[in-house]
Length: 84
Image (cartoon, rainbow, N blue to C red; front, side, top):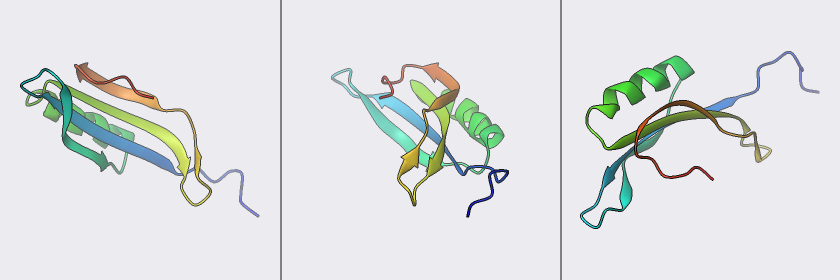
């Protein structure tokens, strides 16, 4: 039996993008798992200086059950592809 007061595990990710010569965005950094939302935002802000776009997002996740909640954007800068 799981304890309902226990926090759900979170997937917290940072991804940075650059633009190819044809104008298409490509992943230049990540996706990397982050330990906390604060750290993800700090990492994303640092990367924003070096890349055309960066996004940090989180979602409730229980990979063992394949259970994922909707993504929540923590930080976004520049050009990033639409999240699915």
